[in-house]
Image 1 (cartoon, rainbow, N blue to C red):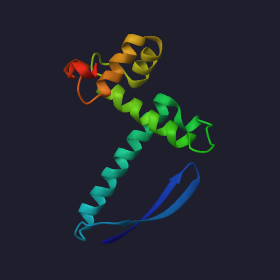
Image 2 (cartoon, rainbow, N blue to C red; image 1 turned 90 degrees about the vertical axis):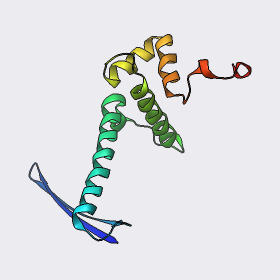
Image 3 (cartoon, rainbow, N blue to C red; image 1 turned 30 degrees about the vertical axis):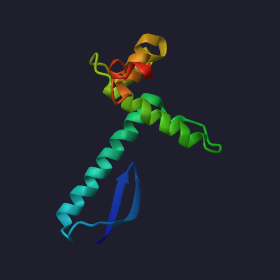
Length: 126
């Protein structure tokens, strides 16, 4: 199914109009397709908001070669690691600052990102 979405946005005396095209394997039911598109953009917007608030991603001035992509991957890894670390209920920004100042906590965050805790590894691997 080919989907065309037209959006018009009025904000601060400025109007923007955009057209987006999607390819979908869903049956041509507008309600299901609209829900899938909204869900996708909700996840995307949430991630980008988190990256911007926690790591000031929008203000990053890195522009050359592969550096922007590499830095984006590192930020996403950090967000996932900080989300998986569950020793306390703090914001990602607070966890990030604590990890920057406390090496033990940083190792806790990195260990949370691993699929299996280090204690469960074979002794040969340690």
